[in-house]
Length: 198
Image 1 (cartoon, one colour):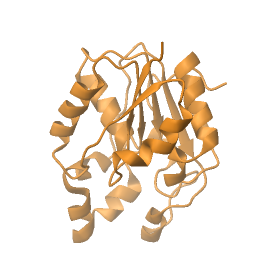
Image 2: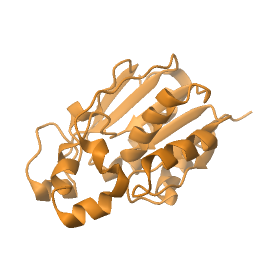
Image 3: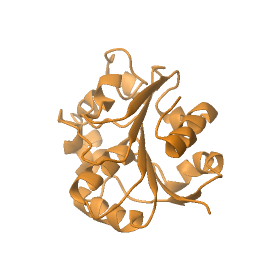
């Protein structure tokens, strides 16, 4: 019997952006969560909590990973057997703060803008949490200035660390390519099955 996985896209991404990753997780029943990153953050948290109930695993990219971590920490009734975050700036995001200095950037980020300030990140669950982060600096955020290395062109590796995570894997991919990469799909499937990337 197949177990269920919720896939959560990043900011400005439709749920369909996770379809290729879903196809690589064919051993699972996948469910694509749709939300607006510009919408009130609390509303997105509550919607994800309702959507994820009864599902065994959760995987999120970028802002989707931030949303997952916050939701699980606030909703202990949502059970999970494992979590994978892909390029998720759970400790804040320098490139996001830079983008937010401009009026257009503030409008584009909407209610999620405050999430890019520096903050702590901790997993309070016994279920294993794995982090995959890119080290190929290809991303639009570089247009707003250089980022501390290593980074994926949008998110710095140091911004992805979660206190209590089971493992973190660095891959030679840019930020947006994390959800397209076959190698990343293999890592995600391996972690969901065994709670580790090796």
